[in-house]
Length: 189
View 1 (tube, rainbow, N blue to C red):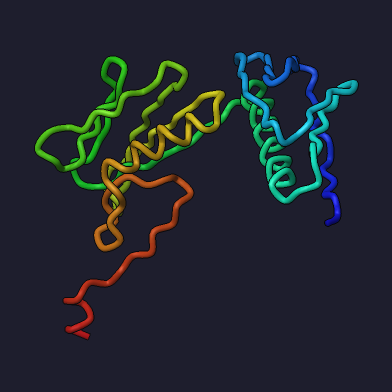
View 2 (view 1 turned 90 degrees about the horizontal axis):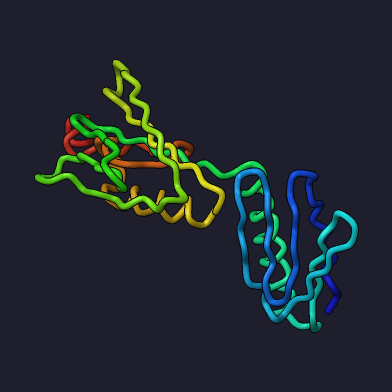
């Protein structure tokens, strides 16, 4: 089996990486993140580059190498630039508001749904008035931990999945919904 060769991860000037097996810690202008390193790989820091190598020549070790490299890159990008995820709430009467430590979502249910936001996540709300689509509420989540931002966004989306017939619900900003035609429109045609 041929060894895969990954390019090294370049450490930007703003980030400071500390390696103490089995932990890696990255400090930057936005904060500090730590992660446990897999026992299947070897991580080395030389000058301003991080090398992730296989500990053994196996398929599993190779898979861990790519995953660890990606996770370390996410740590560095998180503390230097941060991560952002935007959701759109669309539907008549659908809206969101910040309350205490959570986000209240009014999505056509008898009671509002509340999603608890971790203190590491910052949430911004923006309402855009549109003639054809009604009011759209943009919920922007920001944080340094990519996995945490994605998890919170998924929990918010799960409260009311987008309806392909009426285009109502919570969806990601870059998610494309194909409008489905109902039975009535097909019968009349």
